[in-house]
Image 1 (cartoon, rainbow, N blue to C red):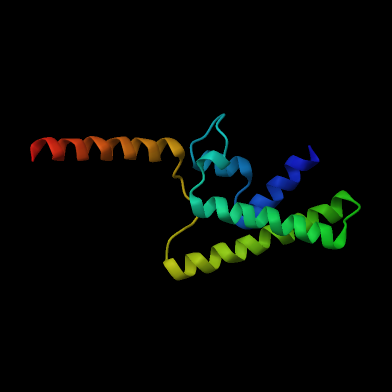
Image 2: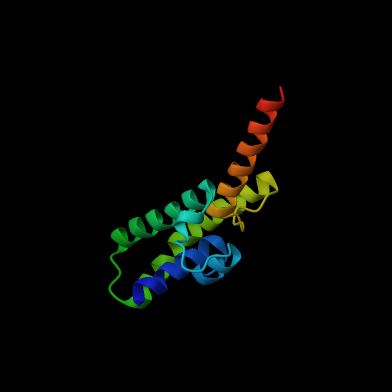
Length: 120
């Protein structure tokens, strides 16, 4: 339970949403959130986790409260990167795009491409 709470804290710090809120945004029920992240979302999530691990190893927290502080700090590093990227691109990183939508768009693109090649 504490692991899930810490994961939620990391996600909230970098994405601005709890894991549950993030899954709702992406329209997920039982599906894995990670499997439905864009490449940028996944990279920032990994940065948050790696930063948290590195900070944890450096300061060796002994209590849940100290671990929560580390989770917040690690997530904030990725959150700062997300905000900087959004400022440069003008686009939100955290999106509702999920694997099903991507697969459907690829299927539709394939059908369109197939239609073009048969028409030519």
